[in-house]
Each structure stands twice: as structure tokens, then as C-alpha cells.
Length: 594
Image 1 (cartoon, rainbow, N blue to C red):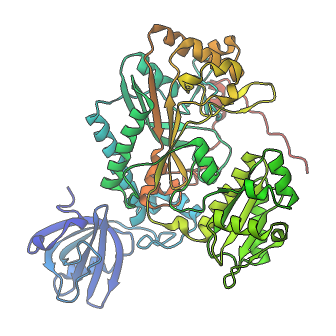
Image 2: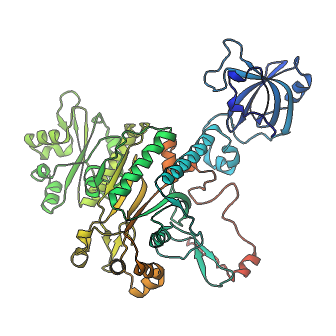
């Protein structure tokens, strides 16, 4: 080894020992006759003192040294002089008095500073990702990710799971997002698909009798561009046989609590996760992934608003649509411009406008255009229902329920940011259960699955598949943390006739189902056990535990929001020879008008 100790391990107990260190120059300070170098490796930093009086040769080398040079240092560990200790550094009580310094490799001046967490343009960071990964925050995040995955493997091993690898090259099947396709040279005209998830394969492993499977799985989805998504991502893929919903929820809850307690930089709010039905989540928060770190809950005021003289509210209530509101504390002073900004958010979520009221901070008098349509008694009732106090702002929405949820959910989210309620350094988990089996009725009369086509309906709702499919609830469950869906799963369909019925309802002919999923449907005829699973997203969970704003900060080599790798200039063109071997021809993209 080119070093006897890591830079970050030196302590007072090493004083007097001769050590050999190797690492990067984090900082260099020339004091005239004495040069101080903070030497950095993955384990931490150590202060090296190169004194011309102690070693002229070492000092001569140190004079050439610059930031990010790779050095080997030999010297004796000494206690720092009294009053010069650095309490912010684990090695801050000691320093290394160098007797020899060797430059293992010089370095060009980096395009940004490595030794501090300055706000560097992300494009530049991603272009020089190997330098970005040297920075302390990124190294901390990557190590945290490793420890999280190790905890997962150890935990599941203790609960009788086995890890099974599934193929990266598989069959293209319709599962929601577009597949990444891989052409086959050996079978011209045919393609493999990169897995969106190992969903079918893990169910087949249950048919095969493995009972408890997991995998740290790489997944690929060719989705439309979104700010915080990646074309390739990692999930903990799991499946269990002979289980019911609560067995899986209890296991995952224990896993998450244990992992957060052992590796997270952000604490839990509670070690018992609330369980909300899909309906309750929508009614209270306007979304099926609620952020429970703060209140601002939706409140139904239909019975009060429907009796008012405000025609929009009254007509909506008469038509069976709700009127809901949220109370935003301390924002009753909002200007017309600020209210206009909120109205634009409401409109982008589907509203035709935004109705507001405000309580005067001094008199408590209700103000706002629509107040004149309410009696004094109705205004008092509204204030009480919403828990409003002087100085508060009230925001209202009335339309179809889905629009009301979307509008107030978006406004709740926005006010959570404005009031800095989302900045709390805590992890607030909850379960959302009892989802509808189908998301909506399509124009052709078929149904769009809420989760995926392998999700089982509640047993007591199976008869409704013949009479009222839209009313069927499923055995789907999502784990939500701080407003993000961090895991999704379900109890699966394990009977061929039921799977066939669901496929027909979502628009697959039996022949199409056989062509796409014949391998699964046939497997179900050979004694498939009742089973269920879940797939927590490793990237998102680690980002939350690291307190990071997006998943790119916890991935070693992420891509941009445009799905490009700036470091390697990927995707890239390939040689014509490769296309010829695959019997592929490229078609020039159509020119855009104008």
C-alpha cells in the first residue's frame, strides 16, 4: 500500500507514530518557510506541516504543489499546539510533521473549487462529475447510499429473503412508460427491452416457490422529460408469497424505521406511519402523496357556501360538486399582485379563478370581494370551520372534485414553500391505501389501471367488475414521505381467470394478452401462490435521508433532465458498421414547420 493510514483516522492516540498518507491537496497555505497542506482522501482530511528546517527536500517539493495534486506524505504525528486545534475537524487535534513529500500526480486547475460547497452551475458539475464527486457533500451522499443499501441487504437477510438477479434484456410489454429497446443482431428485426421493473419476473419467482425475493434492481423508463426524473434508476424490488397487505406494510415500516435510525442525516417524526385511505388523502390534502410535515388541510364548506348568495358556490353545490377551502396563517396582508400569483397557480391546476377572503389582523373583520355574498352568520361559521384567526388568508375552490383537489393541493404545496413549512429537517412517512383499481374510463369504454394490470382488486369487490368497475377498490398501497411517493406495491392477481378479466377491462383482447403476457398467464395455471410485493425507490429515499433537493445529488453519474450525460456526451451517434450489423437504417427527423 502507498499509505499506512487514511487521512481521516488520525487521532491523539497516534501521536509519536510515523505514518504514510496519500491523497489529494485540499488546501495549501504558504507561510514563508512553512507550508501547510490539508491532505484529503475518502475518509477525511489531515493537516500536514512541511517545514524547510525539518526537511529541505520535502519543502522544495511542497513549493511545487497546488490544489488537487496527488501526494504521498511521510511524517510523524504530533499534537497541535495549544489553542490551534480545529474542533470542526475529526483530526483537528493532530497534525503530521512531514519528512518526505512525493508528487504522485500533478493536476490542472479544476473548473470549480473542490474544497468548498460553493453554488456551482449544475451543467458544469455534471460535465466534470468525477471532480464533483471528490467534494465532501457528494462523497458523504454516496457513502450514505452504500450504507443504506447494505442495511437493506442485512435486514432482509435476517427476514429470510434471498437476492435473485433478473435479466436486463427482456421482452417489451406495455407497462406504462415507453421501453428502451435493444436491437438483436442475432435475430434481425427483433428487439429486447430494458426492464421498467422486474414486475413479471418477480411474480414468476413466486410461482417458482422462492416465497421471499428481493433485488437491488436497475430499471429503465423512456419517459417524457421531467425535472427530477432519471431514465435509469434503482429500486428495492421485493415480492412475498402467502402474505396479506398488512404483512408487507409492517415489514417495510420496520425496514424504513431501522434504516433511517442507522444511516439517515435527517430524523423521523414518528416510528409509526399513519395509514390513510386514498379518499382521505385526497379530501384532506388534495393529493395521494401528502406532505404531513405541516397542516393547511382542505376543509369542506359546501353546506355553508351552498346557502350563500355567491352564485358560483351555490350552483356547484346544487350540481353535487364540493366547495373547499384552506386557511393560510399570517397571509391576510397579501397584496393584489400576490393574490394574482396564487390565482395563476389555481388556473394552471384547472380552476376558472380563485376566491379569497382575509381576516383583518386588527379588527378581525372579513374582507374580500365575495364576502358581500355571505351573511354575518355564514362568515362566522366559515371562520370557525376553517379555524381562521385575525391576519389569516382563506383560499377557496369549487368545481368537480378532481379539480378542487388539484387546485387546493397545488395551493397548499405553494404555501408550504412560501411559509417555509417544507424546510423542516425531518422525515414524515405515511401509507396511502385503498386506491381505486381503475384511474378513469377511456373514450373507447375501457379502463386505465390506477397502478398496473397485475394489481388485485379487493376480494369483496370482485363482483363489481361485472356491474360497476369504476367503484372497485384495489389492494394497492403507496409509501409517501415529505410529499414524495417513495414506494409503490400491491397484492397481485394470482388466478388466470381474474387476470384475464382485468386485461379485457383495460382493452386487451385475449389474443393480445396471450401474445404479450402468455408466459405469465400460463404460469398461473401451475399453482401460483397468493403473493404481493413493493418497490421502494432507492434514489429518492437516499436523497430524503441526505436532505438533498433532488435525486441527482445521490447518484454517482446521473443524467440531466434532458436524459443526457454531459461528461461522456451520451447519447451519441454510432458507426454505420454497427447499424449495418444490426440491419438498422436511420430515418432523418421530420423538419419542424417555421
